[in-house]
Image (cartoon, rainbow, N blue to C red; front, side, top):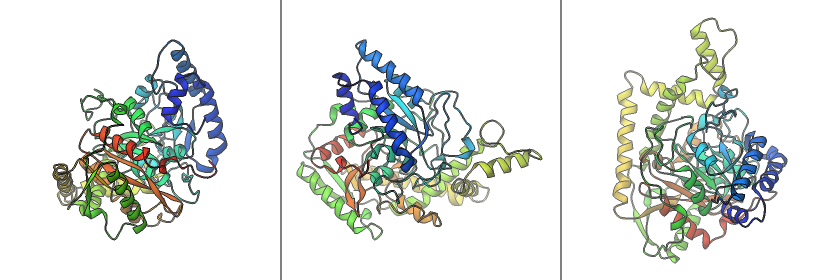
Amino acid sequence: MHQMTLAEIARGLADKKFSSEELTKVLLARITQLDPQLNSFISLTEELAIEQAKAADARRANGESGALLGAPIAHKDLFCTQGIRTSCGSKMLDNFKAPYDATVVAKLAAAGAVTLGKTNMDEFAMGSANESSWYGAVKNPWNLEHVPGGSSGGSAAAVAARLLPAATATDTGGSIRQPAAFTNLTGLKPTYGRVSRWGMIAYASSLDQGGPLARTAEDCAILLQGMAGFDQNDSTSIDEPVPDYSASLNESLQGLRIGVPKEYFSAGLDPRIAELIQNSIKELQKLGAVIKEISLPNMQHAIPAYYVIAPAEASSNLSRFDGVRFGHRCEHPKDLIDLYKRSRGEGFGAEVQRRIMVGAYALSAGYYDAYYLKAQKIRRLVKNDFMAAFNEVDIILGPTTPNPAWKLGTKNSDPVAAYLEDVYTITANLAGLPGLSMPAGFVDGLPVGVQLLAPYFQEGRLLNVAHQYQLNTDWHTRTPTGF
């Protein structure tokens, strides 16, 4: 049962080959047995899962249907879940039980999805390796000595290890796509505003976006269908009709114009990954796609701009965690200032403190114009590059990451080296574009991903290309040894 995709589970439940309750119990037992190797879960919700599975089976018995009705999933631990710990991977929120469900959680529950638990993540979604979590590092099921990527590494590791078929995740600078690439999954960052951020604990509000992690594009289409849509509770949610993502999966790629930016193939890209990307291009050409070289001239400025904007927004968002209203509170404070200092110093880890300090500095008097304002101008130039490119091509293709997953601990002393691993993913967040990573091969036994980018609200096109590619390749079907 654990090898089934979401689509296969939906068909099995519809054909009454098994019940949601049976499947849920199998997967819960598998998580209990195997997750100690991975550390991919922060909380398991066994009672809730069984209750939801029984309810889903009853709904099916009454004639209801739906691709997510009875399907087991997990939520990244920054989606608020009523009455369940929502920690954000931080000591600061270790004792926090959300009083309400995030919109994404509520929508998926209404569709009948079964929540198995909350997955581990980099603290407050800050990281590219899932090593900054207060609950310990997550390990990559393809090689337990390597990182699974971050910040959605818990969701990625759990799905890759076949502990469950799919999970929710979030992407601020590549935190869905990079873990997908590192663990041989398909991961989709939707257009900014496509998925509600209400109840999703914020890192950088103008960059954060929720999305699906699964083994196939078909499964991502199913999960995104349940997540997407306008939400009046979220002022950044866009009132745009949600298409049937599964309906367009089988469209022909004949004549599809794919742009390949020359800036992607620089000295920083592992040549073995470059070769796998070229192989992916050839596969898509066989399916009728037309390849064109393009340029994104301002890509070189994206990392410095991102690492001004994101920390600036984080310093503002995380100011609410002050030891007064909720979350960690220091013992026996001498006065209010001592309460603030010690609660935040004890509650936040090193990476979060680093980004808060950088952000506060960038927003301070005398430096706002020099750093934050300039970074926002660069952001506009990055967006303009994409708009010009999409006048010539339908989608953009390139590597998801410059290197395969690195060994645990090897970049801890050099955070900038980890930041540079986001070079191909952060531009989509700066511009608000949808992006997808799909499996493209292996380097030294570790998975590699190819990234696709599309114009606004063209998630269906990305899923269509990825699905057609997966019908003609088998990288996505590979399973890590031991799982």
